[in-house]
Image (cartoon, rainbow, N blue to C red; front, side):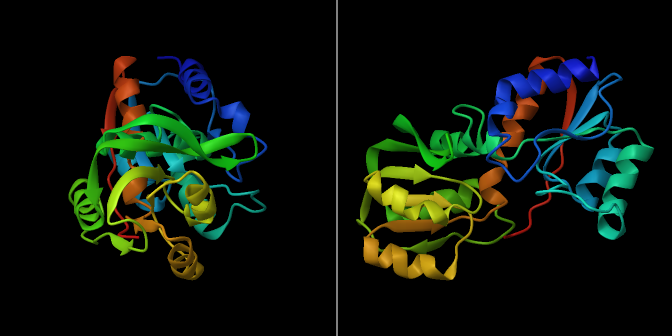
Length: 255
């Protein structure tokens, strides 16, 4: 597949341009050239030395990640930045990044993956950031207890051996769930406004304990990495539909 066609197809599918003004990550092709061919694509959550080295070892012609190398600007390519960028350039492996576009995509996104896992229906966009949304809210067919929901997430997510932390301050039986993966506790008030019984996200902050307790909502912290493997795996399946060979680089952080 032509490399430019691969990049353009991802950009169109993920509506990359629509997030340009709301995301600190420059999404799309972040390192490399548009010219060339793609046969094998590596997918990973993070663009880090470990995943880049694995992509090189796999003979990948491209690497697609959720978290890229640039956040709000890059002044110098030295030290850690150089050690990450250099093998990509040396082996001519373009890095394609999709951060918020892959969080909020209604079918391919991270939140959509968890919504599928929980069999949520009557889904609605959730988690406003500017004119876009980066999460999903929906209803369960059958209520589920807080502990049972935590166990389900712990069993199904790649937590690196870590459990799911629960702030059980809401209803004992959960029907309506808001999902915003990664670092999503800043949308706790929006989850309350959406009448959610629980907010599922990745990692928490100190103030989330008191905010959840005072608002009367359950918060389940299932890990930043663990909640954000769904999007890149969905893109991996899409690339296979396009006739490409793929490899998934799993590197759980336990965080």
